[in-house]
Image (cartoon, rainbow over all chains, first blue to last red; front, side, top):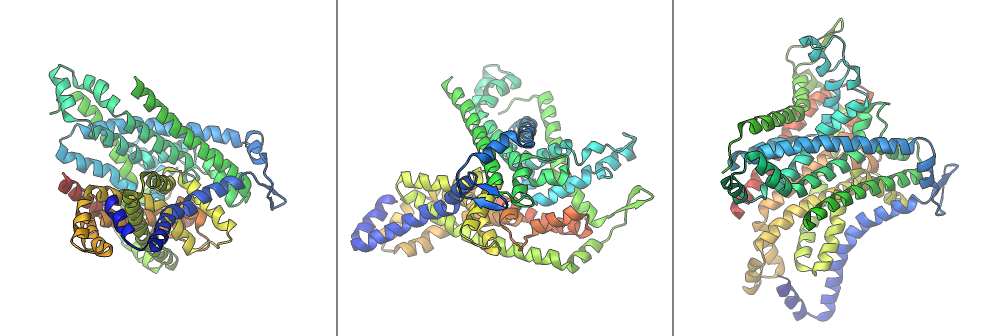
Amino acid sequence: MSTTSSSHRSARPRRRGIVRDLLWHGLNLGLPLLFVVLPILSFVLVSFWTLTNGQIVHTLTLANYRAFFTEGSYLQVYLGTVLLSAQVTLINVVLAIAIAVFIFRRTPRVRFLILMSFMLPLFMSYIIKIYSIRSILGQRGLLNEGLLALGLIDQPIEVLLFSRTAIFIALAVLYLPYAILPIYLALDRIPANYLAASADLGATPLQALRDIVLPLGRPGIAAGAVFTFILTFGDFVTPQMVGGTQGFTFGRIVFSQFGLALNWPLGSALAVILLATTLLAVALAGLTLRREHVR
Amino acid sequence: MKQKAPLLDTLLGLVAVAGLIALYAPLVAVAALSFFQITRVRGVMGFAPFSLEPYAALIANGEILAALATSLIVAMVASLASLVLALMFAFYFVSARRRFGLMMQMMVFLPFLLPPIITGLSLLIAFREIDFARGLATIIVGHIVFIVPVVYRTVLVRLQLLGGSLTEASLDLGASRVQTLVHVILPQMRPALISGALLAFAISFDETLITLFVAGSETTLPIRLWAMMRVGFVPEINALATLILLVTALITLAIGLLQRGQAERAS
């Protein structure tokens, strides 16, 4: 395709060809540069400014980054959020592996249907799901009332809503499909004859799972883990809606700097730290995969 | 052929069922509560008989309907623009030098790989730096930036599957490049274009995290709902949620069928 287009191009007057080429490259490289890369660079730049008496001071300092380590509870909330996201990632990846293997072991015809039914909730309104989870988990919510009616508990469980537990449950439910899809897609690429061969050679299904399916599914597992971590770590609406005052996560702190607190430089610096953390997570996942290749 | 392993399959099946229950409980609860409202008599919870009251209240709620209209406009403009941009980027990727194509692709994918909070915030700051007031336009730009990578991916896969031979044949037979695009390439890509547009529409309609940063006084539906929920409970939310669930389920089903049809034709 590229050869035809270039031969056509050279057949035309040279000047017009150059202008058109420039325009073509300019559009395709310029637009992403303008709307994606420059905005990111601009917020990194703002993170080195400071806010004094409500005015932004345009001199470069590390003051905001120093504040993260020394002032208030930024560092503490940050570490708490890393832990929370890591916990959600762990439970969701374990669940997703089980579900992906379950789908993988069905006949090809029903696989697609089951996979679709796990993906469908992903397209359902995010905000409405949070709202519904809240009405299920509330102190007088459906779950508590149901358990009370069944006589399983005497008192409503209070930690279900406006607590760290509530954020954990809500995030796990909201982001589960993001872990299932990459893991299943990785399993789906495993050639069927590998499994046939292992069965012929006398491997039990569990051995095949341990020695073939899971090792070959590793890239998908890493991708699922990274997706889950990035999305849960950056989510600021879920913690606010179901966490109440108890659920102060790092994403919420960042968002609040652009709302009520209105300290854009500090907010940008905290966002840079959030971004660095997610990049670190990606790098870590890449590293575990590379080690696997070497061996 | 897979070996039978009843115990393993039962265990995995239990996890899968538990997962489905967790994923669908919020959806079912909303739909059920839109028809059977919760009542409390002296603190004891019960359900009111079937009624369509929340739906009637919804039709009368101007604020929600205005936000819904905004959301539909944003989703339509954003998904059409994303489709055009994604097509352009896909053609660029298959025709330009590999280095340039990869450079473009990396930049285009970024907003989808980064947490939405980063995309939203960087756009907010960029708009502020160039003194561009927040409003409908900034929301649409925010959505396009987030949607393009998804549509681009869908379109590119189909374009690469198509290969260059049809284009070459068409050009050899004397068709102009525009004629080739309109009469040869685009018709071949119709399923990818439709499912890409539907996907874009669904994502835009639901986008919350980026919109919260770039929306000024204009509010899309998710933002409106978010604001309403912080204040308290409004029964018409359940009705609206049920309707949205129904529409998105249909859209998703359409995407699924289209992509399956595409996959079957390819194999």
